Each structure stands twice: as C-alpha cells, then as structure tokens.
Image (cartoon, rainbow, N blue to C red; front, side, top):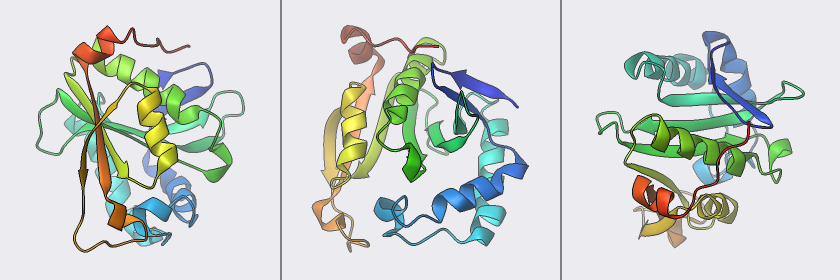
Amino acid sequence: MAIYLETDRLILRHFTENDAELLIELDSDPEVMRYLSGGVPTPPEKIHQETMPRLLSQYEKWDGAYGTFAAHEKTSGEFIGWFILRPKADGPLDEVELGYRFRKTAWGNGYATEGSTALLHKAFTELGVHMVWAETMFVNRASRNVMEKVGMTHVQTHFPEPPLIEGAEHGEVRYEITCHDWELSGPSRPAG
C-alpha cells in the first residue's frame, strides 16, 4: 500500500487497480451522489473503464505527488471515501484542486476537515503550491463549511446552463486559498 499521507485518524493512499469495488459502492449511494449527479449512481462499467484508468494514470503523470487518494479510518482500516489534490489536466502544478467524497457513515465526523487541513499543509510546505481551489454546489452547505473551516474564501459563484440537477439553479461556488493567505492565517498543522 503506497501511503500518501497520515493524520491522527486517517490514512490516505494511492488507489490500485483492485479498488474499483470500493468506488462502485461509494458512488452507488444516492445521498453521496446528490450534489454530483442528482443521486444517480455512477455505472460500474464507467468506474472500471474510465474512472480507475484515469486515477491510476494521474499517479504516473504527476509522479505520485498529486491525484485522488483512498481514505481509510486509521484504527479500523475501513475505507471511508477519497480526497483529491491535483492540478487541472493541462494546468499549472502550483494551482491545485482540493476535493473529497465520503461514505454516508463517515459524514459529520470531521474527516473532511482533518484530511483537507493535512493536504493544504502538504501542498504549501512540500509541493510548492501557490493556490488551492475547491468547488461545490451553493446548496451543499456541509462541503462549503469544510472549505471555510480550512481557511478557504468564497471567490466566485457561477450558474450552469441549463441547471442539470436539483439545487443547481442556486449556482456553483468556488473557494480558494493562496499559500500567502494560508501562512498569514496561522494555519493549523495536521496531527499525525
């Protein structure tokens, strides 16, 4: 298991080709997919044929420094979801996206904040990142709360045309934090 990052309660690791079933199970929960697809599960064949090859190729493209990382609860070893820390496909390496998706059973436990705090620390202290951004639907208050807790600032709201899923009419929001702002805020240091 290629461990990417550890916190007090989490282990983040590279996905492997044997992890498709974890993603199929995660993406089959309508509540998990509510703000992504309106609750429609990701078809298993799409995960096998598109998602897994894309995730694995990201590690090669960015020498393991960026990508999508499986998140496990440290004590039990249970898979609880994933985190993203990656640039846009053809974007600069010093501007990266932060993201997360968790099983419903992991919601409300502070895992997103804990992992995001550790990823921001890694991005700004080890990877030479200048700016980290994240996006979600305006109505996804839980995700926006995480972004705000880790020091990110709401910088933009845009409105997709046409709104594809319920709540999209309220827009999608983008949050950002620069290394400079992170340093000025006296960033929380990740535990672990």
